[in-house]
Length: 157
Image 1 (cartoon, rainbow, N blue to C red):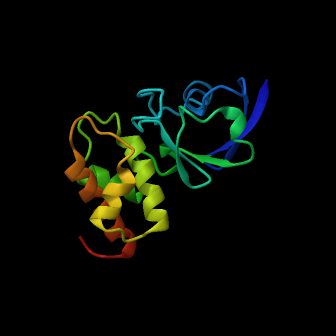
Image 2: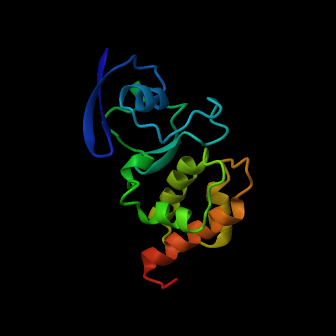
């Protein structure tokens, strides 16, 4: 069945069943591999994307539930050559160790910064809580989100 979906501002036609998890559509049909398969149960956050600006576990979101809503992936924030502010902050703070969770962490953090441009450390921790980092780079992830917040506010670092 052909379904239309908007991802990173571009409309795509995909030939997938409507009950197919969005994660599989992104990775297999659209070749957007930033969102990772971690657990398939919505417990780790490696697959986090935005749907209409809200952080969502894409492993739990069926294609048919997306409808006209807009999907944004880590690829929609920036690129290797031109990283987005948050991506650059994660690089600068060396917030990735194995890197598996980072795309999901960045996507979840972006939803926070979109709503609260200058969050407290507690707000950052609370907001990122659903996403897991098994390598334990939490302190660097926190610094990266603070750095991005500062950059977006024009505070020199």
